[in-house]
Amino acid sequence: MKTATPQLARAINDRLALDLLLERGPLTAPQLRALTGLSRPTVSDLIERLQVNGLIQVTGESGGDRRGPNARLYGIVADRAFVGGVDVRRDVVNVTVADITGAAVGAATRPIGENLPALVAEALTEAAGSRPLHAVVIGAPGMVDPQTGDLAAGNVEPAWRPGLLPALRTLVDAPVSMENEVNLAAVAEHATGAAAGRDDFVLLWLDDGVGAAVVLDGRLRRGASGGAGEIGFLGRLDIRVCDLLGTQAVRGLDLPALAERVVTAAFTLVAVLDPGLVVLGGATSLAGGEPLAALVAERLAEVSPVPVHVRVSGIPDNPVLRGAVSTALSIARDAVFGQGRP
Image (cartoon, rainbow, N blue to C red; front, side, top):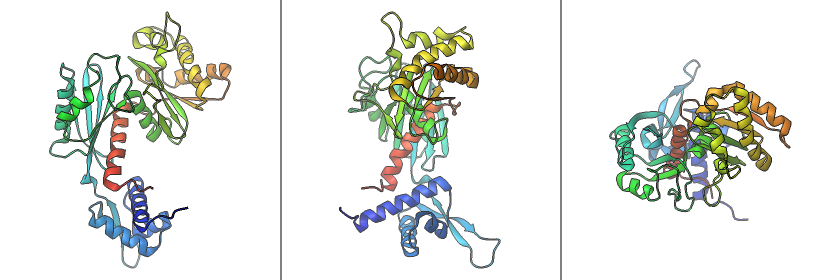
């Protein structure tokens, strides 16, 4: 078995410390030693190295209420990098720009027009101001090819077509990535929403469009062609899940009738994947709320071969946009902080 080189060991320790500072806020050197298990000299060298590289700075002092010298508090240099998240709805483009700690520093909206790449670029420029962006992630409806990162052929929206990603990259002065919008919503739910702390779950998205996202062993699963979770295509030849659960199709249904339709879609995911948790997301799910989740859970318990919990989304304000920002932050942090792993 190969041992880590000193350079790799330093990179791993640096990233460990940076992640702790992101998660817990400013920390003292003794706190970093206690949390990492590293020696005093190693932490001292680490702090000096990260300061020289412009990644952390002294943000204050702790211990003002006790005798003896105060300990310096170290925190992330927030403006070391900025990222952009983009969510495109049927009628509006929403953009959030955040610093490397994840704090929002700018936002913009644009009504949808004919030139989608130009609209996205303009909204990003407005939200970013003079801040350079280190990563941009855009939520897209339909399948995104894992090999090219571009939209797959046969997308559901006319404005979303193969070749859109290269067009965006010519207009945006930053690395641009694209991800399926439901997958991004699942990223947000996994980080801070209804699936926080769960390694296995599926997100059933009920909105204008119907789809699902699959997270197993803590990882988002896209499938060989980017089609994992495209549950809307399931059903008989004369009617599909998307026809049963689209916004227009469920209008006027009472809660029990809606729950039965949701169970029709959720049952397949539960029986095949055994995720342990189904998160209900999208406008239809939020409108139904906890009463809908309870009815779906009750019915699934009657028909499912495995136990499963059902929860409504824990992120009501825009999980797609939150997931886009979170994914962009992961990309930027790996680039700026280093991946810190072999």
